Length: 446
Ligand code: NDP
Image (cartoon, rainbow, N blue to C red):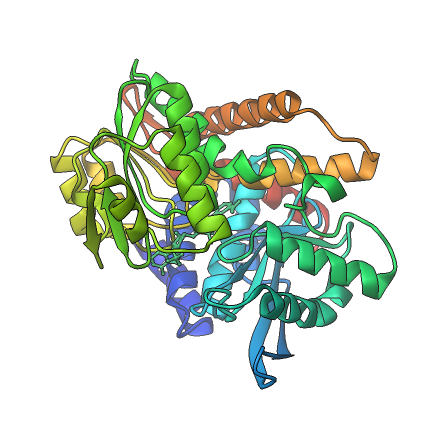
């Protein structure tokens, strides 16, 4: 089997040189899917894996805009339309200086499997720009978003491609992007998700990824007769996903002791409570400050330039960014007694870190399964927009819970290795793959 995986990867490497994140994402999928394909030759005959690893289309464009000093700035915009076999392309936009084609291809590739897992009719895509909203005025962010949409608008539509937020793209950016689309096209339609509730957004969409990853962790813990209540939890990041992971952990009675940003992490052994979380939301979403300020405000430790993985915990939620947790960190977590890791971010654990978790046989869930709650509620936002109705918080939350339960069930079905251990990566990859692959076969070579 290793030979087949290597042969496949050699071809992918040749075609995608200098794209390490994309190669990492494909390698992870190939390791689970190639053995599955060997047992199901129709997928081999139709070269499904080779086709799934090739984007249907990549759009790259110039984004010129004027900053507050009246100078011209130029960024690069992207949209990777990866796979539309089961529905319109769907996936977020990321604004961060690290954005490049490799990162967006890896995210779009993962999105194909994730969206399939939700059971909703959504294909996979991802986009963004190397623009950094940090330190920019609202006026500059608006001008950038308007210029970005002035090109993107011609490639998206409610039935073609429906972007959402991701790192650096929150409610503010979605609002500006939506406004510009509406102005250019002269139509009010659901071309973006993550909109504010006042203009077509779904209740629970801001919370969905963070709440969903906690619901998923609860499902995993249940398989070992455990609850999240009373557990000590380590979270990285302090953006959208991290904030709502913490909120749901507080609600279920777990104690969250860390948060981080790109500057470092805070360790609050007393635990983050509701009022401290309200402070974080104001700090990060309104003032756009640094997590270090939390440590000063609540008199706890701040570790500059470090990640929180050496803090003793039962459960870890990596919620910041890709490859933020390596094999050494994974070993430290396991040695300190951590027995459940659910990814809120996309691919935060390196392939070697995942191998450490698997060989220690702890509960580990890949983001494409555990963070699918965000896109699931985006799918529900699309349905509400099409029907021109809005569901209540309770209705959306119970649908989210049901979807996370169903994704967990699919992972267990296709990932059980023996009576005590589920390989959630294998389960997620195979479950996500089957639906897309069957649709691709049915639609011919397109
Ligand atoms: P936000 O922009 O709201 O927050 C990102 C957080 O991660 C910030 O705390 C940020 O710190 C930190 N971060 C970003 N880049 C780095 C880096 N290179 N090194 C260290 N820290 C970093 O983004 P989200 O919370 O929306 O997204 C977080 C992760 O979750 C991403 O991997 C995203 O793809 C994934 N995700 C998000 C979904 C959503 O619905 N929003 C859905 C599914 C997955 P700083 O402010 O200092 O940059």
